[in-house]
Image 1: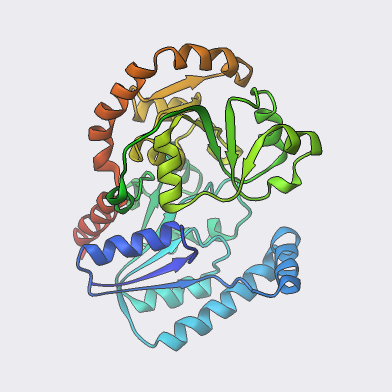
Image 2: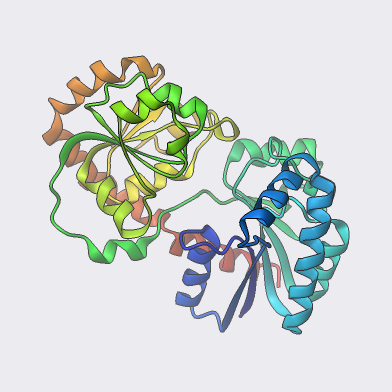
Length: 334
């Protein structure tokens, strides 16, 4: 099986994780090509401005450069997988269809109804679409008028390869939050006692002075370091961004998969998906977290027992299982 993946090619990107797992599943060749991201800071700013304000120009640039990369490969694939591809026009999708001998599929990892895109006009051209949320899956079916038998539920997962380095846990009495800065997150976290929480992620230098002064803020958290911090923290805080409100997000799988306990903003879809799990504690008002933390800390031994039981349940939600599902599902259509 030869597979081409198109998307982000960062150290911790889902595209890389899927590539790794397709190779574990004995796929003969798996190539990953990324969208254009210039290294020059000036060009980065220009591209960011175009993406934000001149999306059609940004899309034209990305499609042109992607076409050049595809032409340089000079080969066909059994399956071509596009992650999101919100700037893809009809011509580039047609080119990909000609290169995909068996399947051209689209994997949605964001919210196509919130993110700026031109893909809504062309997404019908894909053979199949895999979506992380059942709510968005149903919305694609109804609003974009795509048949249900072309849309499949593919939730997020966790990278099982990180579990190989598990060490003895020293549980700290603190809440872990990891994620990039934005104004809304800063305002929400500002309502939690600074003594209770540790913050990791990019962009927190943009926070207000008094926030940076009072809160324990560190850098990016990925890979084995992320797994270690999750398993060693009493709780990992989950705040939904606008595109995932009341849905189900990646963090839930990561925290449970890396042997943590999730303190999550309430979500109807998430509650339904994880209904048999006890390592998720929900809140509806972040102002109540300070008092909630005291109650949780007093039941620390019970919470750690829940982790062990839920770890057995979450194992089937690894990205290895997700990659295996895609291959098995696609073979039905060959």
